[in-house]
Length: 211
Image (cartoon, rainbow, N blue to C red; front, side, top):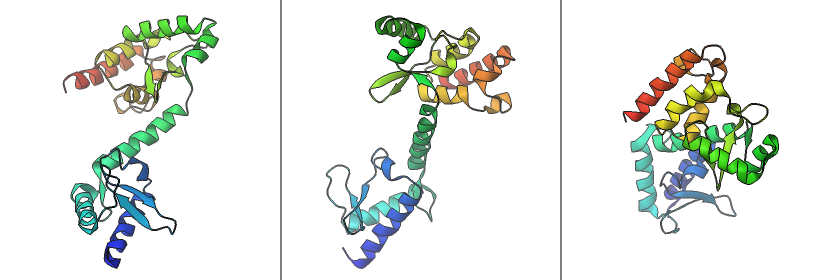
């Protein structure tokens, strides 16, 4: 490639790195980025693993600018969404949660009995279970100190889970400030006004079901 091509590769790489989006390129179906031993930007075709040639690099630049929310930065919407989702998942995983073994310990039951109880409650839309890598985890906000289900959340969880809401999105909605509740956090606000929180959950569930 020409010096101009190398300059373009570096410019695109610098923008993507500055925004912390390198790790999300492949998931977005875009060419991947790495740096060689001399620190030069190297872009590769996600299908073949081969380096992009000058024409492919120019195509990438045009693609990013066409789909980008900010053409001068060449950042596509899909890539920003993936990055936001990844950051949100990291934030949620930094809050308390249980795997089957930890929950069994809190409940004082066997792992098998705990797994059965979790699956049953989840199938009845009474418990939010979230897939994380190869495992499934139970966010702690919906349980009491003994590992039992918080009864006041039953009417809030049920409509969301029945509507098929994405588990990660449900976890986020239940534990972060919500516009429908004037900035209140649903899992906390339900203690003061259960009817209001249930109504907000039902409205959200209706929006999900209608899509």
